[in-house]
Length: 100
Length: 184
Image (cartoon, rainbow over all chains, first blue to last red; front, top):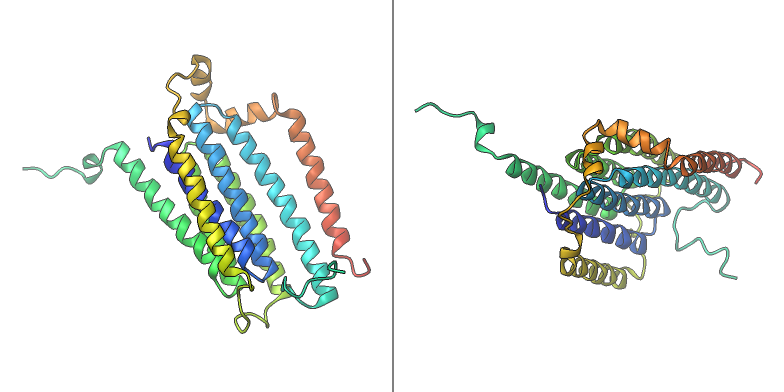
């Protein structure tokens, strides 16, 4: 059995890659994909602890996280389409309607 | 001397460790490629590969149901939706533009610092995560099939959250339909 610390460290690394993606990219679709990556790395934590403690509740939580990620992707992509229709761009540097 | 089959030379532990490292490498490499790719379509394909690697890790952790849901929902549903939107929105303006924004150096440093910080605390606190004694009834429960166990929990202990999740999905569906209408 692989030690749980390995899974936690892996999940941390993937989460940090997602954070860097959200902070650095200009394309809003790729930012959304980085958020999906971050949500998924949290799932790895939940499932790893579920295996460690022999308690399947962690897997149930992972399924809820996947549900929320699906809802988030649907709404986020809807917003992106509405935004593209109005502003003709998916570049976050040019999306500054609320700056005032 | 008779040659032994290859699988006998590898102990189950070494097998699991090897699989873990292969899947972990795949996951990290494809995650980095997702974040750095210039073309959003490529980025989406790399993310699909990363999510498949994650599903493999779930299978390795004996969470077959979550792994299957991961493949069905993420790869089959969410990523196809992403590819659709990429095709609709941004085909012509890719690859010619700068891919990173002005603050990318600061963000990269912050990301690396965050990564080291989290890894440091996880490694320092590793002893807390190791629990030797597991209560007996949980072990008996875990000997049934994984899908059966998860389904039993979903429809008993977590019934209310399950119903709320269905309401959430309904709300998200209505929101997506309303947001994409012509006159908002």
